[in-house]
Amino acid sequence: MQLRDLLLMRHGSFINVEAGGSGNGGNITINAPIIVGLENSDIIANAVQGRGGNIQIATQGIIGLKFRPKLTSENDITASSQFGVSGTVQINNIGVDPNLGLVQLPANVTDPSQKIATGCAGSEGSRFVATGRGGVPQNPLQQVTSDVYDGLRLRTWDDVRDISAYQKTGEVTAQIPATPEVLVQATSWHRNAQGKVELIADKSPTYVQQSLTCAAVTKS
Image (cartoon, rainbow, N blue to C red; front, side, top):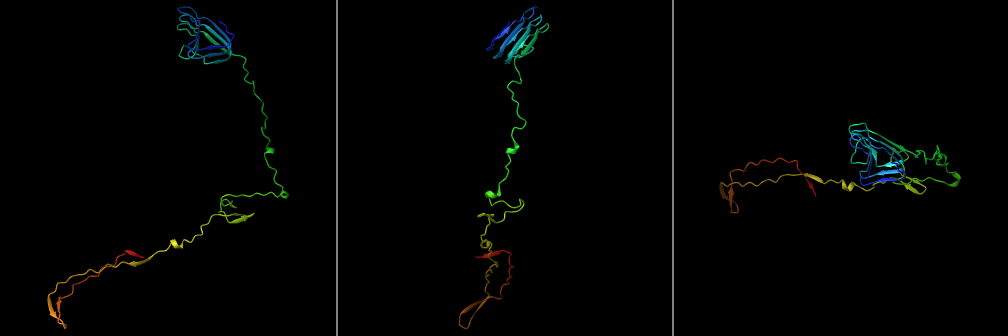
């Protein structure tokens, strides 16, 4: 079998020269620019007890189809035998030059001499000004200092507010507990020089002064 045009196999298509019993599988020769096999399409030259057939394919490109030792659910090219000797499958890709379309590139893609500036002439009044957040420090390890360059003030941000108003503390005074009042029962009475009756107790109660505490009260 010989084909000389485009070969497109779809929807379970197959080219089959297999043999049953003791017969030998047939031979298949395909010449086509492009061979495409999709959706479980097969090229078969199998046998049972006899020898598998021979498959020869000459093409510039084969898509989907692949040689396998037996049939599968994919797109197969097979020339096997169940109990005999398997056949041969030979695929020749012809007319394809791997160097076709390649372009020799130059060793130096760009000229480095054209990428470097030659400098600025002093007579043309050229200048370089660096501006940004606070300017550029003279040393990367130092802070930016105040400076004026060509009318531009380059300096860091300083907080000059007076914070002494936020550091005042109120006067502290010791807290003295109030003396509790103690009632004493009278034991006798008499009249004073004005003729009024006064109650008299035998003795004054003993009072123990409480110690001061460490609590401080801020004087507002």
